[in-house]
Length: 141
Image (cartoon, rainbow, N blue to C red; front, side):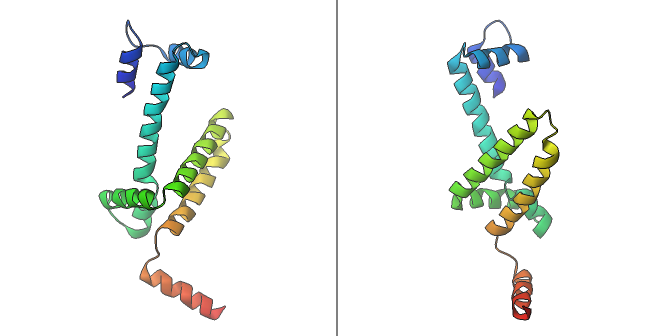
């Protein structure tokens, strides 16, 4: 997709990384920047939608990738606002990690991983044997 956007907005071959950064930061081609970030945002949202609970689901329930991907899409369709907020938080934490020359990723990535597990547990209903364990724990307390 990036190649197509470059071909539409740049003539005389593909631009270098420096040319793209210069074009975006100086607003020389605002239409290019808008299309480039819109296409990138679309792909980022797509990848988020197919994977937000897929990996934890595969680890937790030993499901296959297709089932986990479909479950992730269903979760996004049933919980669009919280998951959009969660995706935004992940993006902001990623930017913070990159802005600190990757040192911040030492803190942000484990935080994202840990939080993703709890988000998964809130979205996906526990299995029957887990429900019994929770009820037993509540009865003891």
